[in-house]
Image (cartoon, rainbow, N blue to C red; front, side, top):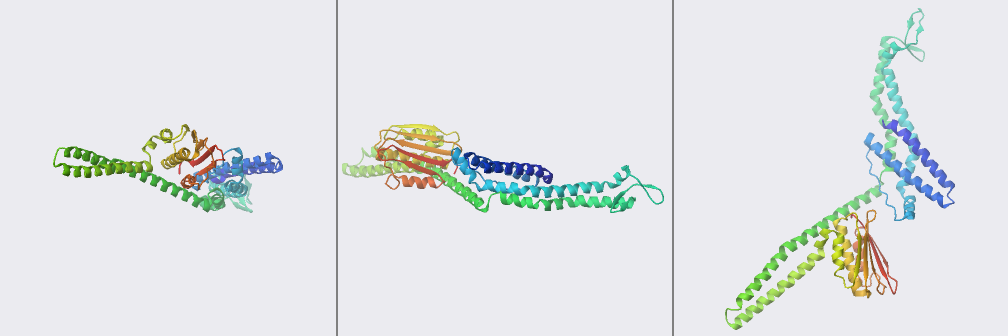
Length: 409
């Protein structure tokens, strides 16, 4: 079936892509030429995907597709398409597919059609209206091959057996004829070894980031519900012990005992405060309600008035939310401590699988990574998930820091 279905699709793809490339080359001296060539490359990717799905359904040939991720903007899309090796490999496949499809279709038709004709020969022999006369003058029916008349029943049965043999051999012969197509699909429509390895590393890193985030959340909850709760109970018991000591024993002994209890009580409260800060630094519990809610709480604690705009249609993964939150916290801390700003704004959007956060202030500007502002640390944090950070901070301000993160690490 694949051999028959692949030929018209191959012919249409060959003609379409060749036509688009030819027109694009004709207009290459104009801006339109590059757009037509980009359209040809993108169309080849779509047709390659169709061939890949057809091979998966009919040949059980499953090839993982490489993802196309263009840069933002229409010019970024064109630049990404023209520089995408996957698209050019798809064009190569469509150029080579037509002769390979002709071979596969010819072998499929020959094996099945001739097999069916020969297998049914005993029946068609009797139904055939053509006759010829033998030397004795008798009317005889039969098939003539190279002058040899196969008009007897034994000969007809031999022809039928040959037809059955062709049909039985058809799957093997068709499979061999389609092998070049399989090799082309694997080599030109699938991921290259490098991209396959890169994808595996990205998936491994994503699992590691998610596992680390889950571990940090578990530690935070253990601290909150375990050690922190026990320390709170200890502080309450020490308070009650101090009150009980107020009416017992000599004045000197009570003073020393109360002093020890006060020291223990103070140390307990400091430990509780440190544990709370540690738990909050691992993953703020407010992030359980989403990044937007967490940022809304964060901006109210800033040292300067902060205007927040958050439009996140698809919730990012927990790891991405944590990174975005701490980046916003660090940037707002920088605004309050170093910029001399009177106001700031945080804008968060989530277009096309990308989380983009922009923090703007009206301060004095001049922010640079490595100046003790924490921006170098932010770049390192963002880089762990292939994010990007852009800093625009001319002298005199304003300062605009843009952070882009994938919605899923």
